[in-house]
View (cartoon, rainbow, N blue to C red):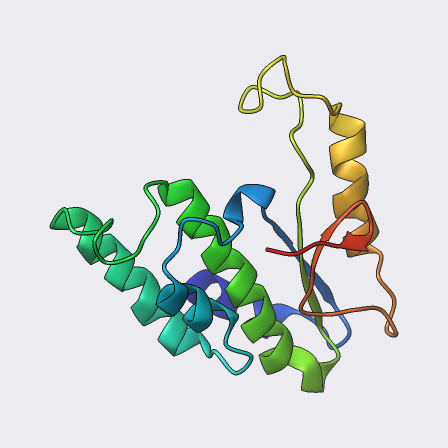
Length: 151
């Protein structure tokens, strides 16, 4: 978040921030208590950072499963990114800065592999859509193909 703070300080009012997230960050596999914390409407960045540190500590001491965390660090990181998106959108609203997370979908890339159903252009279109949101557009959401999706 230090980098985010440094960059947002350089952005003009009315800028747009697009977080590239993933449907893999859905909240299945999280305990109800952790899920509630991540979905807390007033979750702030400091509390979110502490929650993510709790995951790191639980992994380090081997207690992540019993502590209510899923087994995928990627999943936790994307859920954290989605929560951060909401917190940043709230923090930057006074400056008119829009912050949204986008899932490009399962895309044929080195990471996605050749079996992925989407080509790079289709995945990129979601990101471009979010980058071109105007002043009346949404903020703090999670989108795929220009449509809100649950996480």
